[in-house]
Image (cartoon, rainbow, N blue to C red; front, side):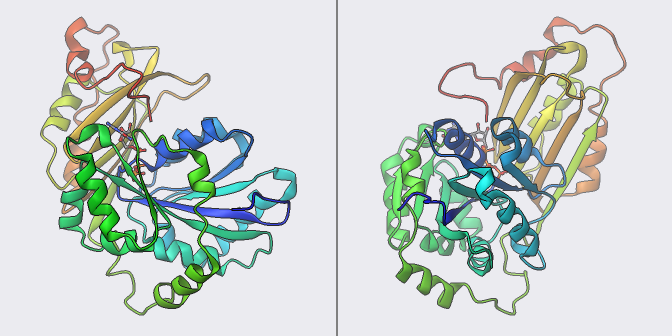
Length: 348
Ligand SMILES: Nc1nc2c(ncn2[C@@H]2O[C@H](COP(=O)(O)OP(=O)(O)OP(=O)(O)O)[C@@H](O)[C@H]2O)c(=O)[nH]1
């Protein structure tokens, strides 16, 4: 692909099911993009913008966030256009824009929105689909439409190959489902940024997409991946009790597929907040120092199908800690079981 010559900024759509590793990949790109400056548009499904928080530090003013709901269901694309306009301005000095879609977005809707943009300085830069190798079989079984998403992709990153014994089988299966896309295995989203900048589809392929896949149909949003999914946001200024939270997490219902956010354990660790990620049955905590001046908040987003959001909310309330100034030493043991301190597993 030609790099931005000052005329056209490519816009890459980064999609993939809940928890597949989109934010991790975007963060990798931001740190490894060499001389290229990346602008990011982040779209979360939950009302608290956890993904935007996770990428903001690396980007400063070149990230914008479209929170609360799926971008694919935005009434019109003018809001997106406004953001793209801001990022594509020559003064922003941005070479490529990446839109990180919510894990429940319909990629073809996003591609359509980019193609429909009237902004003269941007050009559609391709669809990147991230796949969670460990969850791929289950996700496909629950959502056969994933195959359709992969068929639209220009690059598929088969992520989390460290979590599967049969990475070659999963990669082969993905290859059989794509059209012309390149398929690259990865761990923690570590792909060569050139892959993304190079994944721009040919004119022919864009034409094919816009004709076959991109016209708006009249199904409404019933057939969308997010139909049937609910999300719940939990924000509190009072610390959580680690034992109670672990009890909640260990007994979480099967439909609660994704949890992400940050937890304040108050006196149990005054220096760190704990990024938490649950994807299916997988659970991980990453302690990280509180950013300077950050308000000490617990902020969680829970996403799932057939979940009782009111009951989950009540259960989370019950995880709030008692107002004790001191913490007992064993209190964090349950949490620390889910912390991995190796270079192989950096915080997302
Ligand atoms: N073991 C392993 N974990 C990974 C890998 N890539 C990402 N993760 C972890 O998977 C979890 C989800 O990663 P994210 O990057 O937040 O996923 P996402 O696709 O942005 O999630 P949503 O925005 O909720 O759809 C985090 O705990 C990551 O650290 C990987 O290659 N291997």
